Image: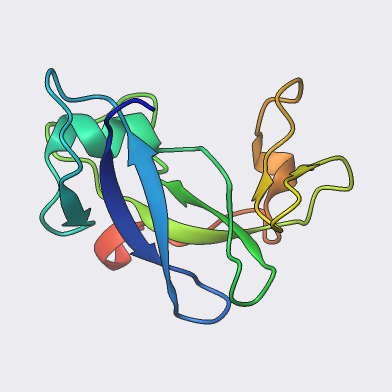
Length: 120
C-alpha cells in the first residue's frame, strides 16, 4: 500500500465530505486537507477527476473553469456529474470512474457550473 494525502470536499448532492486522494506532494504522508487549506499542487492534481459519494450515491467533480490555465491558486468548486453506466464497482460498494473514458464537460449535470467566488 502506498502513501498518499487526502483532500476532502463536500458532496454537492448531500453535503457529506468525500475524500480525494493525491500523490502530488514529493513526500505524501497521509495528511488531510480541506479545499481551503490544501496546497496548490494538490488542488491541481484533483481537478476534473469525478468521485462517487457513498453517502448518497451521487457523482461529482472538482472544477475550475479556468483550467487548464490554472492560476497560482486553483479555486475548485464541486459540480454534479451524471452517473456513469460503466463505472467500476468494488465488492464493498466503492465506485470509480471508468478508466477508459476521459471525463468531459458533457458528463456534467448542468452545462456550465458557477465560477468560484461568484465570478462571471
